[in-house]
Length: 398
Image (cartoon, rainbow, N blue to C red; front, side):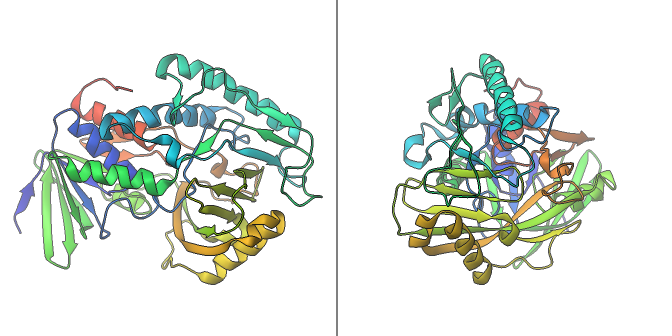
């Protein structure tokens, strides 16, 4: 089987792979983007709440490194996507600011969280001097967090007596994926090949040979540079080239959508621990999550099967409706499993778990094999930009 030459091969057409492809194209470099599924941006990049993190939820990382990484990614997010895709109507897909509800049985108290939120604001001010303060079309210059020593409006009493108003927002991930998918499809320097599962990687003279299979048959690609942007498959692919890496865990959490009830719900994250979220999007859909029910897999290997489960979705809906009665007026509108990849051998109910830390917008490289190590939607565009800049020996541009 003769290998097809390619300038750069990218494995995985989620937001990480598409970001690298568009950042390379902006520098005049061609790439082949391989995706095992039937279309780009249809899995983890799509099946999430769309929160563009500012680091508020990572209060248990006392080093501040996760908050710093999230702020950098968040402030680079809109500028990079607009550079690659053109002007974006951020208002039409953007949520209101999140309320952070301090749960009485949480892992951090209100004073501890307030101190963390102040460090996040300081990080926004510091990073904003370098990257600017455009956050989903909102200027974060002078951003504030306000403490409310009362129950969150609309929440059942007896669970919390304090919440914080924050500037953090979500953007409907369906719209993010639509815009990015359109841009990469229209980009002449990117060839997107779907239905192509990578089965092996061999070192070859001057680069790597990437072996793939599809219903149409086996095809191999030869390139000097290969960028591993796979999601739950990334560790196994890295091991083919780099050898065993650090232990990572694989979780599956259901994305549940409801619609049809009253429209005055506010975005809420319940902290700090294994709780949940309510995220109303402008089109009327509401993303809901209750971690103990939504998380259906946790282990050091990917789940053998990750399928949509109506019973799981129903439990999540009932649990959130018990906390926010207005959610009970909504009807179940959609659900499906989403993989989460992170470090840590214990779950988020452990204050010392590695799940309370997230990598910056980064990558590792060895002899032309590049592996994206960003683990959040927030940091994906910046990770793609940094990787493309390193491959081409150019400057990072935000």
